[in-house]
Image: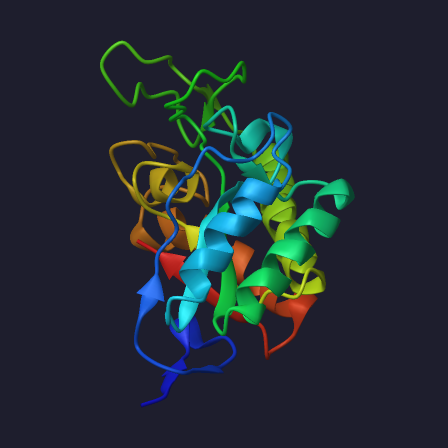
Length: 218
């Protein structure tokens, strides 16, 4: 049976079955976040096993977004060639390809020398750092980094993207009243706390067109 996959009302693709491989970190990228042959081999094996959709593991949308030392990156034009080869390998195995877009925000589980940032300066775990509170200009810069990353994904032949809004990372930090204690338009009410994600989605729609699928993992 076929499955029409249409999350959050953006775009539609037809999958050959209902089996979806979710994004899972492999630690196979280079230290700069570029695709390696090992990454390509790993996803080629999975796509050729009969899955209908492969969602490639989290890719950092900016240099400040990384949460792991060997995380894939989609923050620069130099990433596009390798990511294109990866998408082509997944398609060659018979599956559709998404890639997950991610910003760690105030939660950085790996040994990465990056200043954590968040909606509010709230410690997100025992012994963890207190992140820097993003100002509105910085929030807009992060939104633009997600939009640019999605555009790179489209040019790299992916069928869609998934916004990583789960597991305590930045978009989820905006959602939660525990980590988002802002009193401006990006905090307070549910509408305020979801504004960050809404502006990312709307910006991606405008940049990539109606046929490009945008999913949101919550």
